[in-house]
Length: 98
Image (tube, rainbow, N blue to C red; front, side, top):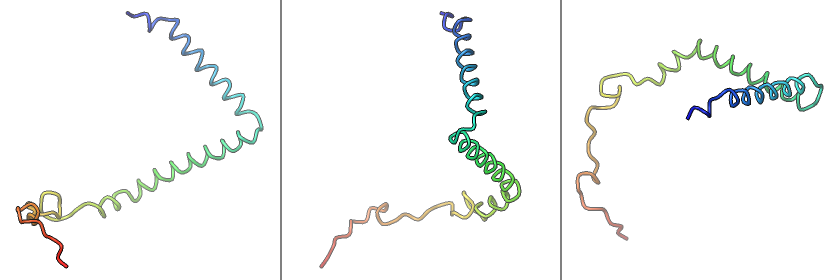
């Protein structure tokens, strides 16, 4: 039952991870166009995530306060009871008249 987690299985996973990392490092060190594009896009992604993080730290409370419903009621501004529409009251359906 424990055969799936034996040393051979874990060593295969470690070997595949190491081969992937070594191939990635070899590709990273080449001056290929696709690697350059990947580096630019990776840098842009990291820069964007850092900028979003700092912007949320600065403006997060302001944005949260803008969309937070203020006032009395169960969900802020909504009343505790909602009036029933004609459909829910059981009124007969309206027909089209020419």
